[in-house]
Structure formats: structure tokens, C-alpha cells
Length: 296
Image 1 (cartoon, rainbow, N blue to C red):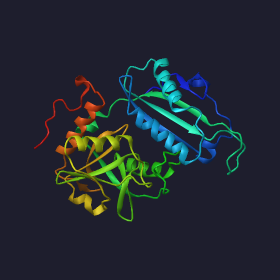
Image 2 (image 1 turned 120 degrees about the horizontal axis):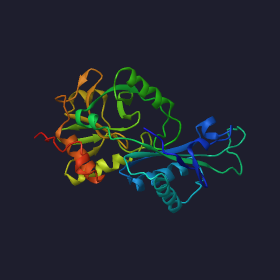
Image 3 (image 1 turned 45 degrees about the vertical axis):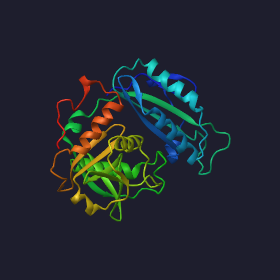
Image 4 (image 1 turned 60 degrees about the vertical axis):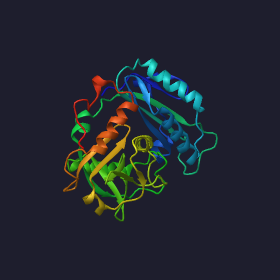
């Protein structure tokens, strides 16, 4: 997954190897910043409006003054793809910190935010989308304001690493047995044709794909219920899936040692996957599901 050479900084584009940050940088020292990961399909942004809105909400929540207004941000991100001549599937990583200043917990006076963004090739996880993945359960020890997409991700990193060490794709997080989300995605339970997921409160990330999943459910007359469920509810699930910008709509077939439903991707998940492809304008030749039939 190569990184394209031109990287967007505050006021210019620089070559990848020329990007330098000062030693005292608040994102490095405090995690004092925010980020977004935006999906690109065949050189086109997907859900860019939702990502930009969330970026600015996160900035306002932690009192970072953004270096660009929204209109300028759209322009610069378009230029990022154009300058790198992006025509393939990719992702854009964008990070904004409070800036560079001598280390002090209090906000520095007169410091401008640091921004950079880069493009990296990213193929769709087609095999996982077709076949499904496994997950583990893990205690949710994050702070209470997970709706802010901040750089403070150490609990997420540790949970994801635990999943990796157990040959699993994701870690399903819970607080006192109540499922919140995953280490880097939102999670959903399907029972009797209804989709359940944790309410969009401050203790979970309000995923951009999550918003689309809700819209897909409305479009397909699938009841979408924002209601917490418990770990023990997993064993009674007909289907389980997760969503994120890099995982799309991903079936979960096993959690810990528990097989979910029939152990294959279910009809609701498959339908939502197809809705995602249509919404993201995935061409027929690149579809992961063109030869798959949805079970009745």
C-alpha cells in the first residue's frame, strides 16, 4: 500500500520525504489533536461531507481553531487527489493538532494548528467481505468522549492488538457487559430481521458509514433500533456485522468461541453490503457480491 508522494500541509504541498514537524508538537506530546480517514473509490471521495462535518465537530469539541474553513478544506482535499493523480481505491488520512509550542498542559497562546494529509492506496477487503470475519470481546476502558475522533487511541490499539494475537479481525468492546462498539468500527446485531446498535451518544464514535447503514435500513424497510445490547445477547443473534470506512459493511461469523447464527453471512448483512456498493458507486466489475445470492 504505497503512500502517494505529495502531502498536504497547512499552506502548501510538500514531498513525502520533506515533511518535518518540530520536536515539541502537541499531537506527539499530548495526543492533542484530531483526525479523519476518508475512503476513496476509483479516485472519488466517499462520504466526504460526513467526514468534514465530523472533523469540524471534533475540532470544536476540543477547542482547536481550524487552519481552513470548510470550503477551503474541500478545495485542498480535491487538490490532494488531483496532484497525486489518484485513480485507484485509496484512503486519505488527515490530522490536525493544536500546534507546536514548548510543552505545557495549558493551551499555548498564539499557536497555529498543524495540519497534514496524505493519500495511500487501499484495496477493498473483498475476501473478508465475502467470507466474513471473527472477533473477540474486550473491556472498553476508553474515555467517555469517544464521539470526538481524537488522537488518543492507546486503548483502541491495545484491544486491536489483542484481537490480532488471537487471529481475529476486531475486538468488540463492552462496559460492564454492555456492548458499545469495536476498537475501530461500529457493531450491529441482527435479530428477527431488525438491526440493533448502540445509540449515538458521547461514548461511541458516530461513524460516517454508521449513518449510511441507518439510511440503508430505512430505504429497505429494515427496522433500525438504537438500543444497547449485552454480551449475552450475542449468542442469540441471527447475524452480526461491523462498519467503518475501511471495512465497509463486514459480516462477523464468530465471537470468541461463539458461532453467530448459521456461521455464514446473513441476508440482512448481504443486503446492506449491496446497498453500500450502490451508494459508493462501486462498478459492477469490482463488486464483491455479483455472483453471490442472498439467502431467503
